Length: 192
Image (cartoon, rainbow, N blue to C red; front, side, top):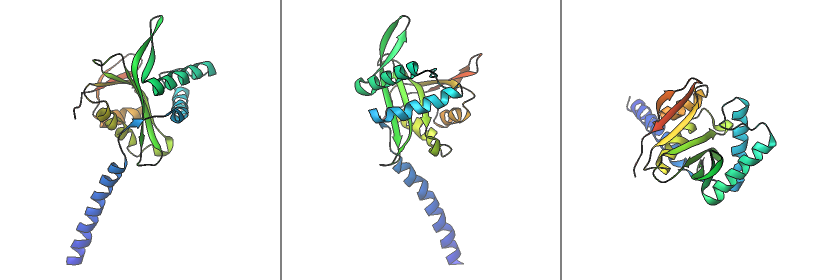
């Protein structure tokens, strides 16, 4: 009977330790490099075919423009944002989530006009082979920690059901839904 208790309680401890070690192996967000841009563009292109991308990327000229904007963001930390007829330079960060020293699990693009404004999550994704494992929520929780001190905003179609679930699991609250079924989400500021 004592052996049965040891097996029962020993198994629970091992099960409880496994998620913690996995969570430790999934580190915080890190700055993306130029080599990561292709993966980001491919994810944006996949989203565009479903009508879920913030950009229309069906022609090569628009894809090339997005590539240049992402390269500028990686190199200079600024996102080029259209502002009426002009181009404004917003703070921008292209970040990725990796599992230890392994492959990239997902990425996100965040931008804001100045230090006082909330970060806007312009686009985020989890690589197809890692989807369904909770990495979307991990990516967004890591974003809240990395971009702390101000709120984070996101807008996306409700049809992106897994992305909506990830946002809600990461502590984002649904603020409102417009007539086109695009929802706005906000996560309050977090502090170290």
